[in-house]
Amino acid sequence: MAETPKKEESKVEGVKRASRHLRGTIAETLAADSTHFHESDEVLLKFHGTYQQDDRDVRQDRRKQGLEEAYQFMVRVAIPSGVVTADQYVQLDELADRYANHSLRVTTRQGIQYHGVLKKGLKKTIAGINQSLLTTLAACGDVERNVMGCPAPLGDSAHTTVQRLTKEIARELRPATKAYHEIWLNGEKHLSTETESETEPFYKDTYLPRKFKTGVALATDNCIDVYSYDLALVAIFEGDNVVGYNVLVGGGMGMTHGKADTFARLAEPLAYVEAEHVIETARTVAAIYRDHGNRADRRHSRIKYLIAEWGMEKFREEFRQRVSFTPQPFRSIPTPPVHDHLGLHPQADGKWFLGVFVESGRIIDRPECQMKTALRSIVEKYRTGVHFTASQNVLLTGLNRSDVDAVQRVLKDHGVRLVEELSLARRFSMACPALPTCGLAMADSERLMPAVVDRFEAELTSLGLRDEPISLRMTGCPNGCARPYTADIAFVGRRPDVYHIYVGGGIPGDRVVDLYAADVATQDMVTVMRPLLSSWASNRRNSESLSDYYQRLLNRTESRQLITGKEEPTQRLIQLGIAS
Ligand code: SF4
Image 1 (cartoon, protein in one colour):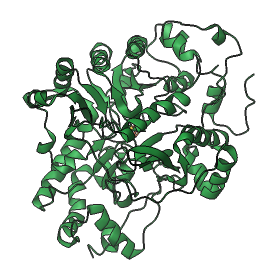
Image 2 (cartoon, rainbow, N blue to C red; image 1 turned 90 degrees about the vertical axis):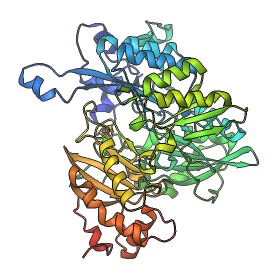
Image 3 (cartoon, protein in one colour; image 1 turned 180 degrees about the vertical axis):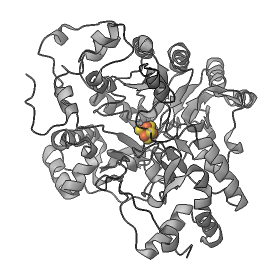
Image 4 (tube, helix red, strand yellow; image 1 turned 90 degrees about the horizontal axis):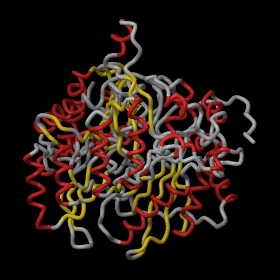
């Protein structure tokens, strides 16, 4: 029996409830001779790992001509810890050519996205991904999303444990519906799916109120930016072995321009749990969210709003009541360092891995850089594993030391810059896809970011700061897919060619930015930042990072506040004493 609708639930809740566990009319529309799905199936498609989009560059022209939108689909592969084999990578690469726009995009959550898939190729794309023993199920939608973990193949016990745990959590919280197999994998209907007895034991009829993101970091490496997730687990180890996890909850990047009651937030300490209880912990936190998250207003549905409303003590008490063990006090540990894993590193098994920078995560062939061809030929010839990082980069793993020079030569011959050739501003840069594919984008991001990095690179070099680690991130809207609110400098799209600039997060990812300048035109970005950058260059203490410097000045003014969607023109330069 379907659950009874609750009062004041959003339209999306009704769609989920009526969907017969994510079926809706997807199969029927898929079989029909149309270019797209209708609205309610669009909601359900996300749970299957695909977004219906249209080419926004041609939207207005097509409308003027009386044509429908140029519909296309984004297809996302969920890959726990971002780890794929050589064979899987080659198959992913082939699918990009066969059905998508000849590119693979490494996401900021260690998945892979295809763009430009047409409806007629959608089923074949998803089936092809499954043939390589990967899945798109729950890569999007109101469920546990891709579970992140350090992808470095260091081979030590702690890294191996963390990578295994991300797979276990993904398995534990994967939807149970058979709809996915029915629709995409050639009607492998199970008898149980044709009766009312099929249930979602964990998610029930309406799944989670919204998305739920989990990451597992190590006390020695937070390369996944763990504090920005709904559930953050930090592995604590004794000697080589993981003994337990610090658990933090309630992180989340998204907010809405103009809505002061929406905000970016870092996860807060909940408890320390022993290793044997970590799966139960993940399941319990997700269950509290399932049962108490806001289902009326999707802008306030993420678990961070529940925690902001309840307070951590109430959440902790609810957690204590539900688990079968006694949670322990959160363990005080230093902020974990962040390694981006680029460059050449030894593995425990005597092999090597090479981290390769991928600008905005886009693996594509362009005249100046044939990244896609280079990676594929290396993977085919040297049979390397491919691990995707949370910074949208690629680790080529399992290399013999004797092959490293040849691999680097292939990269160079194809115009791929090795890490030694990158400025630190470029090395730590990230951008979301935004225009022309993302339906929510208000401004460009991926297409604009390389030019913005060029200009900041030049400015930083002229100030003698080229070798200072600094993270630049850009998104086309405030939803925060490239985690802008933990960056040193973030550009968040307001409208075409206009951005809010935020400053003050930092590479460790343990601090949220501050709104530095509102509504800055693209061409003015460097000019607006110049006084702060020069002040940092002249007045910083020792090796103080830009964000440490900024926060020191900000603390002095006592004007720090939670960043929210509220728009307010800032007078930060004056407040910080940098301008008068
Ligand atoms: Fe789209 Fe906004 Fe996410 Fe960028 S941050 S991909 S514009 S939703």
